[in-house]
Length: 143
Image (cartoon, rainbow, N blue to C red):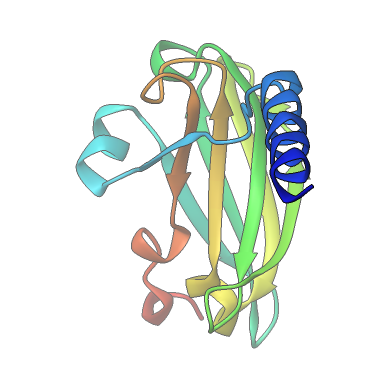
């Protein structure tokens, strides 16, 4: 009886494994360095939006590695590294064909935020280019 039960269980596991499609949920993430941002003409700007807040603008060309981008995500993590929010930002096209996104935040949150330019290709076999605004903004220069 035990042998027949084991065989039935093994067959059930094999059927489920064979019927389950592969997962394509993982993407490649490429952190953008300051040198790459300069080379790829990425601009990250900040403007004061009150005594404790700021407005961050990220602009990039819709060409080269970004020509096939699908969306731009705002991602925020907590101090423990756990995800707090993921939002799709609305893209605006500038007159010269660049893509611009923006968001407002408290200055204390800047280190918890990443902007992902998600593409169908280019970012190491599809994935996202992760821009950390804190690496490009000097808060001491904002009044």
